[in-house]
Length: 418
Image (tube, rainbow, N blue to C red):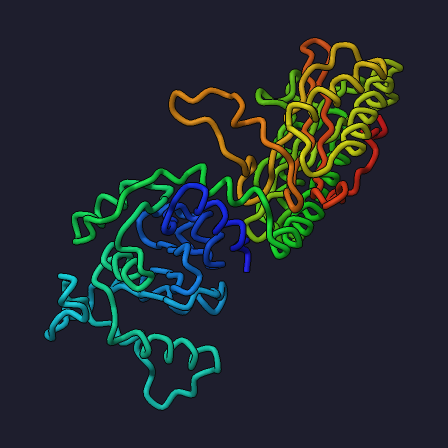
């Protein structure tokens, strides 16, 4: 189970929510362990996850009939699976709605895909056929009607419900649940996800290793004259070979200043890739040829800043304190121009903590305190046009008395032969 349920219950209680509805695919995955194909195709309003605050009530997963077999690939812990008709080649049911008291329309029949006469089904095919048959007599008509049924089953028919898409709550009110109130839970989901479960930390460790290895391979492919697309290709191939999924690798938001790698000019790599939908994030400075004394001094100073972060990371440390201490340590070590650190939570999203929305400005809400089982990146980029760029970024998990690195904490400077 990815979900940190005690954390979810605690945060729901704090916000006075009777439960959560997930429409965004990362939150559906977080609540249910199920990753849908449309998460990559970005097809919204097809799958939903439901989590009641009351742990005695069933969590729910709503998905199309034709996706039932996908549960063999991404199994869910959720007990209440509600499938809805999603195939136009069948006739609409002639009998009454399975839930006439809820006003639910009849669903299109779906007994499963055809089975060839006399064929011997594999164990997996038998599982698919059995699953389709088990749901055939209780299909919902549409995703929204399936979602309403999941809420009724979970006892979430009155009170405040958080959703990452509050429009969904309005539909449910119109469908016969006037007693529910919509709460925008975009940042509530992020607040819950900040503190990871043991399964998440294990997955993030794998993501960190896969992404770092691919990033290092790309960095070592940066020879004199190499273009950024050539370096990117190495990263993407290495991610795929390691079972990861390509995110991005950048040397700066505008690319390499000369359009290619130039000996003697430092540039950063910032690699962000996914493994089982969780992010790895890793950064270093690369130089082709002998580094200058100034570059070596700056790299050592940035490492001193990271070491200072490691000395003070523990539960209760405020983000603002971490930033100030790292900058002070880097500057004290001789890199006077260094001024920017961006510690961020990492997980299902690159920034896995609450973000500013609407008129909200960065402020106290963004100055969160670290907690045990948070996974954070100490993110230390530096840009100086006309000279070069630098980066140092590693991932750590906060423990009860400090931290544990998830990346290898390799040297800050990668030196390639000219």
